[in-house]
Length: 618
Image 1 (tube, rainbow, N blue to C red):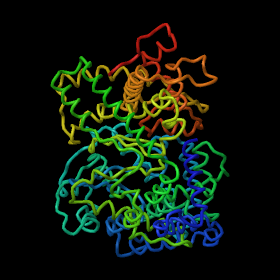
Image 2: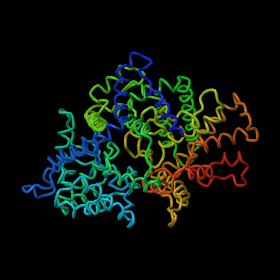
Image 3: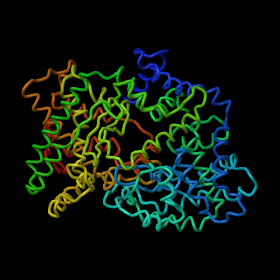
């Protein structure tokens, strides 16, 4: 609902013929051109698959499957990877997260199917193989390829088999493996890391340090590449290009893939997203800060920003109090934890630097090298992918820009960034039912947005955040005794949430991975407690009135109702089961029920017979 509200506001803004401020003329013109190109469905349909055909033909010149002279699969493989990276296609590994110290080389987030576990389903793989044969067969119809189409799925399954599960990839103690370029190269010799760095990094960049997400994955991938014919690898790359840009074209050839994706998500196979929604999502990805500027000017007040700032500050103050009462932490560790809370940077609403969303000139300058037209939706998307890639790699060798945001302003979400020791709340999440603004009773705002704030702050001390100190350095600042005490209490959350299941789908119930979701579940429990006591402190000084028509509920009960209302959702069984595999968050019903089970304050507010929390850390 919140995302829909934000999208509807943006749709209304984009229906205007000009901006309210003449200083925004260039920003609005570029945004409107990109939106018009996407909305012009007749032109997109008329062009059919031609833009995608052209990209595949261009790729064929770089990595040809029919080359007689190049028999090995690794010849020109680095050039192929570079082309795919610059086109926004992830094919073998994701190494697009540079910071001032290192480049991260991680396993693929999505190989072909939504999660590695899908390759264990014979029925799903069979249906997927049929789709690959139909769609890829249409695009790669040259002689000699037909018998290799099925091998593409086999190749993907082999990659899936060696890919670490989501739990391992989310575990920073397993995914943070510093290596030299030479050491990394020895793991996957078919791809030249030094050539990729030379091609993408600034010319003056000098560093021999990479962070490898999974050395075992890299080594296993090398063996798979050695054992796979060049034709199959080429077809796999073609398939990744098609999957990446399937939504940027309108052509009957792509329809079997769309129908398959719909079935996996539990939708009607013929379902289509409203065009304007697709186009606003595209703008958020390509011109996100321009879109953010117009969203903030239209939908986010300074008073809301100030209230959000106040709530987050109150939560931080309460968390310091909680830490002082935490007996399982030795005093020296507790002091460092309190110092870390004091150092947490809170960002509310929108960025004021890198770029400054409130400065039209700064936003225009940020996108000055990105060229878009009102007629070429496909090419606009490719240009945005190249722009983003080079923008990220240009940061190498420079100090980390602490002013940057990882989410655009209309985004309905929030996050804690351990290396930056910062909590970030975009304007999109600061709307009902999470945030009601300064005119509403505070128990509503603290029950929802306050709990979100406490949740993000709690991440600083969860199973991941505890590995980063007050300045964001990855280090072990907890002693063994503290770690043991944490793990003992954390195991309770693991066991508790492992009992929750995704909706059944004609098969055995699929249990939540309590270890994968541990950090989020700890954060939910810590967040609701900190938010409740921060609100109660305000309530004692300046009580809020009861809401008309809801007098049968106490304010304390309305606080928790506000929390539950924020998490209320509807999802298909298929989408819920997919999330079990690769989402570090528990299903939303579990986030309500489990968090209430762990809240003494909830049980007291509703006069539950058992007041003791099932699990408690803070």
